[in-house]
Length: 368
Image 1 (cartoon, rainbow, N blue to C red):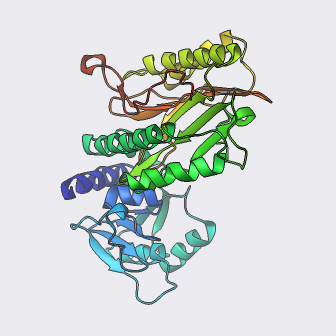
Image 2 (cartoon, one colour):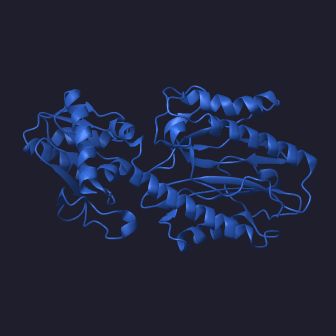
Image 3 (tube, rainbow, N blue to C red):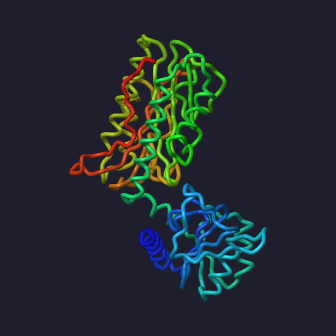
């Protein structure tokens, strides 16, 4: 893996040099982990003129879930407590005789920016922008393998929950049980706060579980994800509680399923991100559900649960192969409930079988 991280840093260095900067200071934790193999709390990465240095406020955590720093990096640990690794990294950049330093200005506070300027006044500070985030969009097969394992864990946790008695249990209790099952099956932890929504809450995006209890006749919407070796996946399903779903529940479920299928089928290298959103949204629009639809149909996943690309009406750009994304349309009817169906897939060319579905729990409307 050391060669992988070195190659990533070399690609970033090339981008910096093309923009006129000799060095870069990476402070966003997910970006640090992508380039260094680990992101200890508060650590920053200097992609320097003569060497790359991981600057930490204290000794790195040795837990496997936190990752391990690339052995090719020099590790610089600040003495004592209270020092700022970013300021120390800027000082190191100046000591390497760099005349310029690119910063992630979208992630650096004004106070930190001033402190960096004060410790290295001769450095010309530039904006690194989203250069690392752009490098992260296309995943290698090792990254996709981590996402695949995370998806298997999420599928397993969800499948086990469905085998238990659900009526009478609260949203909050079910969410906590799902998160426990994720860890039991080998996840680092949940990829995001687990959402369990029942009855009139069902179908809401990012619903925060309450003490409402599952009742006969409810829709039950569940959205969860597992983190495995830092990589985060997502799955969402909706179920009917009781032996006979109502006609309106069947019709709404079939509609959202059709929209989700249209979005999945639109995934291909070269497809415009907005066209994937349009494919799913058109199905719902045509049925009269124009108002209140989610702002996007899906998004990228990886070291963060919400990455580029965005599958939204105004999204720019096109999809590449080996880009993992979610497709997650939904409809919520105020006072009644609704449906969300959410999968994580990897964009693949048609010659390789088309989109690779990572989350495989059935999308048939199950009556529990």
